[in-house]
Length: 218
Image (cartoon, rainbow, N blue to C red; front, side):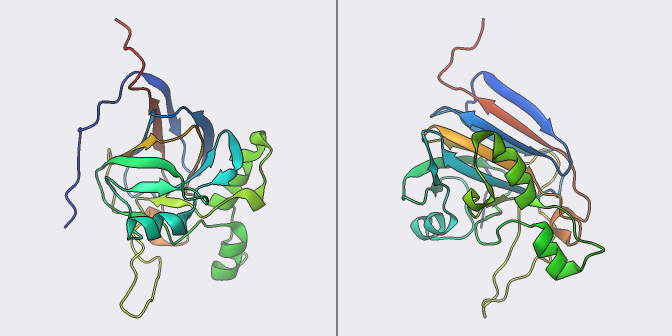
């Protein structure tokens, strides 16, 4: 049974602290050893995250390698996120929920159109990622399968899957990831409101980057 870790990580001075509004997105660079903290501010919010090697943007997060090497599709404290070249990109240091999926992938306008019809379809995480990575001259074709933070996506005994559960996170729940290389990080605060992954009500998140190797100002 998952036992959440809380307050175990020495974060160091902040280098970024930002509220990402409901349905919003963000992208930024991280140095190796810096810590990324993603907090669900209001609860029941799924969050899509992707990574690129900042020094070679053709190398990106690879969900399948991360599942195979860790031996699970539900990543949590102690698990490592791997690139398409099987290089460590980031490590989970802290996780207060224990539900982080690597097989569901991201929502999109086209997927909503197929699943829910033209009246309910709207831009999703793929469109958010596309906008977030554009300043680095990356395009939609460069977007990998994501890490779904706080997404409960169960697999049944026969292989059946469905997005039929609300995100299990509560206000203040968070994950902390350590960058294991210089990274470009892109985050989509999932805008999905056609299924229960966000409790049918997308809300804000808080994204903080800290540097444990930088001295705290006296």
